[in-house]
Image (cartoon, rainbow, N blue to C red; front, top):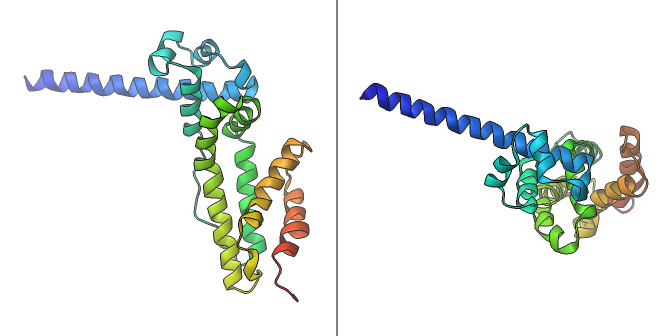
Amino acid sequence: MVASHWVAASAQTSSRRRGAVLERAILDAALDQLGTVGWNGLTMEGVAAGAQTGKAAVYRRWPSKEDLVADALLSGLPHFDTVPDLGSVREDLLELCRRARDAMFSRPGFAWRSVIHECDPTQAERFHAVIIKGVVEPTLEMLCEVINRGIERGEVRRDAANGYVFDAIPAMMMYRSKICASELTDQELEEMIDQLMVPLLRPDGA
């Protein structure tokens, strides 16, 4: 009896593991499709082929393309580490920019941008909520902490802790990437910090 229970439990564990592996493969295939053919080109059939499974296996887990993409975006959210503390607001902002650049040009990053730029407003609303909560808000929180720390150290003017200043880096990076087709090299990031953010944040009379 004990042996039969052990065999049954082992079989259930093995089945769950296979299911988790298949689910991960499907989500990865969805991210790949978003990054290559975009939202408009993504199909459940294409995702199934990429995951080396049948279309039925995809539909059993996700009844629609929107449901699948929402979970794929969630699965690809970056894991934000602690806020950098490198001794100066310039170095901290530069490190945050590098992290943001790496996230933007990662496989999930290409997927997020595909959804943002291709979906109609109704479709995009659901995905925007995922991206804002998982990517934008954590980034702004870290920028806020870096700037407030700079204020405490006397590096940053006291009225700089506001939404327009916090939005400057993300807005500029998206503009340079999307409109100017910039790859946001380390040199470009340094120029953005030195020519935009440092003068913007500098205390009066510094």
